[in-house]
Length: 188
Image 1 (cartoon, rainbow, N blue to C red):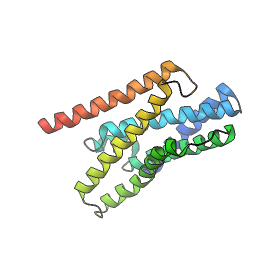
Image 2: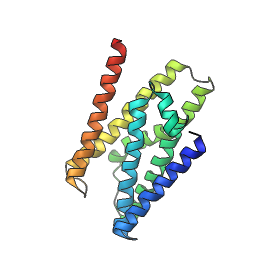
Image 3: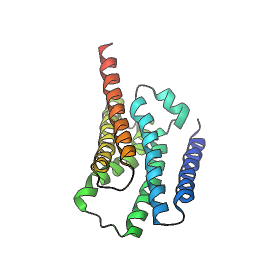
């Protein structure tokens, strides 16, 4: 897939989830919260593909997300961040530094990774270093998704407990698949 097409589809999906949030909850703080929640789930879906398929199945990632798949995730999750910060501001929710520090690092990696990928494609970063950077990126961002759902399952956020448990289960399943794939690949 071409990069422009993938970006357009990611933006269209974000517009769809925003419309879904507004349709179900109206033009209200609840609508923005729902939009933010749906956008986060879209980001998790995109990340799941990248987490499971990078680096072994790059052709599949390129087919669905273009050769700039880290950029597609950064755009989608950047939109989620904008919605999240808007919701936090408009709802008057105070930010606690110790709670946002891990997310800040994750977002920094998310926004830097497309540049690292571009540099690796140009030969400016050696393959082994990019591979290591990619593994650190994938597992750290996975960890932030996991901690997000741990917090939700523990009841620190409003919403459906069953959905939070299901999504946390999904995050755990993709870790199991990734570890199995890495182990299986090394044993062959």
